[in-house]
Image (tube, rainbow, N blue to C red; front, side, top):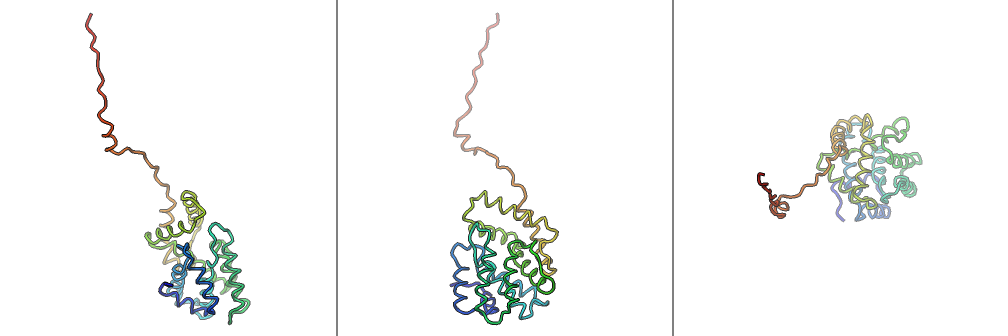
Length: 242
């Protein structure tokens, strides 16, 4: 199994037993996962390490919780289902009982954070450090909207491939609706470091994606016109003068 560079660091941060690790990898490497796979998890973890290195997010106990939330937040993915986040959180809750070193409060925090990814900008945030860490994870999960345009477009093709329950027109409508809704928020990425790194490009990508498409014009190629032959000449009758 080919794993993205840096993914092992994410696995090591949680130290999953072999059976749990194998089940998670089986889920995340399903052949139809064109976006929500190991690469997506690795990108989020790499950004956590890069942009959170100078703050409280790098404390070992906090980083472990962030890693667990990243690993399990897309563990259940059924195209078209509206409860993927809730079912991913339930899988985490069941799994966490078999892990060492997580307190009941920490297990609840990870589960609540996974559920919050169903609505990144409107999910309630607990007070104190738990709320700050949840906001950080939610911003990490939104950060791919702020990729360079070519990467954003490639991710869009991956999302389209995953949405097997929709035809092209329905997927385009759903994507534009989602992007327009989050684009209406005053700030997409609320954490200062991630806002500075990704907000402007996210706004540009959203504007480009939801801009009205020019109506297609039906034109007949010149070759087809010539195949029709020259236009018939009209005959003019000349009347004799009286």
